[in-house]
Amino acid sequence: MNKEALQECIQKEGQFSFSRSGGPGGQNVNKVNTKVLLTLPMESLAFCLSEEEINRVRGKLTGRINSRDELFLQFQEERSQLMNRERSVDKMAELIENSLKVQKKRKKTRPGRAAKEKRLNAKKKQGEKKKSRSRISIHD
Image (tube, rainbow, N blue to C red; front, top):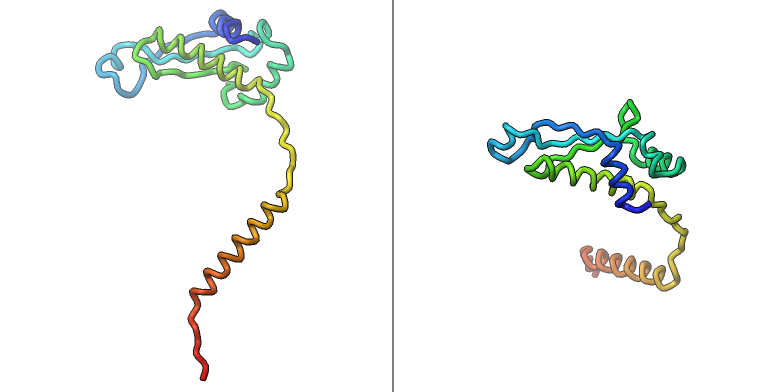
């Protein structure tokens, strides 16, 4: 899946809603609806993703899917509504792309002989250090 096709799919199928943004921005914050809420119905991803990929997205992004089975994202970093809209599409595509990546299985390994010896030597050194801190008793 290439990123441009995914962004185009999000642009076509996503619903954008705008509201007033919080944070710095002076009077612009009080006057302009710059915060973007992008919602994308999961079934609309069928145009650009396979069923298996959609299920993988569902599994990885469960916290971003609402009760109506829509993937949602809020974006309010820029002062302009247009910039926030463009960046929200990019961010949504990035989220979907990252959720599609399959992590490699971790191979179990054991420490080698040198690593074991190094650990034991460090433990002995630490023990000697603590032993040298104890009081020396003089018996006549």
